[in-house]
Image (cartoon, helix red, strand yellow):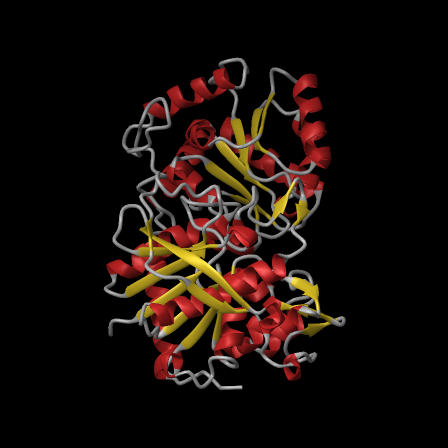
Length: 494
């Protein structure tokens, strides 16, 4: 296919800054696109957790001026590096007032009061940087609300700019729950004209909704799984934007995220005590024993060990798990949890670990090495999400021969096939209703299979280990979508 110039902007990128799956995507997708022959440039903020010396970042010559409407001209500097393991350049927008803080979006649970200005600035700075670099993008790829202003700007401020006259825009929705809702004064900073402050574009309840505006103005939008692309058109998963998205369904697509198997694969994983593969699972038994030891659980090979890694948040089904835990602790199992989040959940599960020290292990916080060890050492992996745009841990679990138990939503439904005891087909166990009873019943089903259908369970392991969700497949999906933007002349200037 024709070589494209692609400008990707995001608020977080692995390994520089991460709070969720968005960072994983932007850390991997540009490299896969580069492998396909495209010229890809990535832009993100230079938060103060991004160490200039550690990542060998170099200052870009000259300053970058960004017109911020009522705030006037705001100047910044730019650092440049590469995405690790590639030659893809990544540019860091340096502005102490906006990004020189402890957190990405909040501090101690409180969102920064000027997040609208911070990320409007990022969106505008990315556009101006392209001009500074004399880089004429064929496609601008914005991600979530943080850079959703870019398609809006492309159709307004930059509508007659010759550097963007042939540019199309894509907005990827990684999580629709977070939309960038702010006081309407943000319009003065956007500086695109108050005629765009209407219910069909940016206005919502007399405020500004940046993601809404991005959805309206982008030439195409995509969600990070096919199922999630369907779900966000419904009231249950649409977070108030379902009607809008449904009205723009002709430009809505679903592209499942990929996985970096150079990091998440038991044959090469240096975080786990013993590497293994589908031909020899003996190392997995060692990983299980070491995981039990790490969580001060009895080292038993005769009980199924269930792992969970994730944020203790309602989205992740932590409330469902809390309601079902008493039934689960009545089963002959062990469980280990790694995560942090809502305080009630941290305290609740700490109490459970005290009540059931031989069955339940807890680590409050996040450690990457421990996440790898849970994936490798568990027999089953639980993801009871209320909604899950894509999900990655269930895909990691498949690779490690750790059978997923998931709620059939979003990417969880797309990536896991339900077990069929007769044919020994499938890759995991799924439940559909977001109820403690459905969760408990499905865990019971999985545990019964482990105890009474060992042949089927071992086949489940091997079925999952054969599955692949590579980034090159996802990148080809994006490549196809980019070309549709260009060849179809989908953009309508507003």
